[in-house]
Image (tube, rainbow, N blue to C red; front, side, top):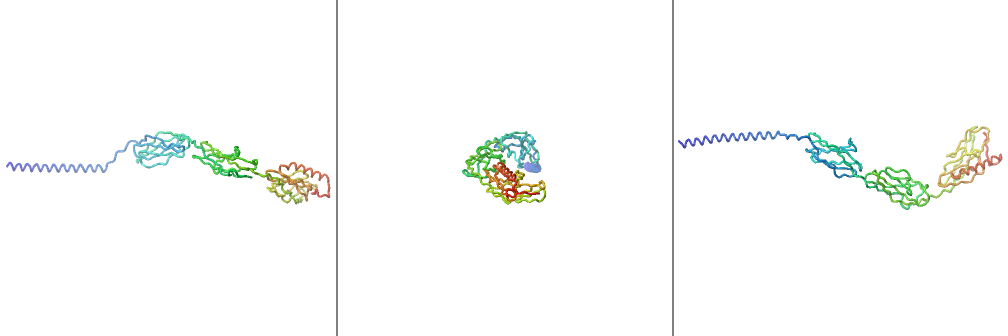
Length: 367
């Protein structure tokens, strides 16, 4: 009996235990399922306001500055900067989401104070901006380099030549000034190629030294090594040829048209002086001239006591003995032209005063 009760008690206890175990197991399963469900829908609470901290500069050069900073959440990176508090420039936005940031401001001016501000935004577009900061770039103390490229040292030069220079700088070349014997020649050249057109005829014959002075945007300057050349311009002592073949016609009662054969010269003929009655009335660059505004029924003695040419030195031919249609014409160089004109005028006035109607020394035009 007792044993039977014991067996029934164990059986009842076992049944209760089974029910308890089943309940515990169900509760555990229920608890696991709820935990799993909660985990699948859970979102991390958003952080507080995005903040920027620990700004610092490094690698400061004459033209660039690197800036680093940190944020309390992953965010992008950008710098706003300028030479005033209105900024005006920005770095390229780096969209990489990081908490440690680095950006470089470039194309800056040497020795210049810059204002800047840091910007970051996280994935939820929470934005942060630092307070205004300043940094000064390094001063540029490196002078430019410069050298004369042409002509070469020891060259003999004549006429107009091109003097050229090569210049470079770690920042930028502002100008190149050419000098001859230490004196500025021409204006400073502000852009490459750096060339000077030099008329060596303006220099004395002999040795001269060419230099170039390069200046950069920070006012550092360098003078090139001198290049010595020899100027050798031979004086032009050859006069032009005498113009010939003067022809005069009277197309109207108040006009005489003149034409003649051109003169030649070893350099160049630049013009002719036209005279009437021994006095200059005009200058002609061509081999013809129209003398107008004359009086009708009036005798005029015409000719040309003329001529000058290009060259460093001047000379003249002899004043002609005849004027008028068959005249040889005076062809004078510029430095002696005025004096020779006076001689020619006196010569003509003597011829006119002789009133020799039959001679070949004078030709009259009756209008």
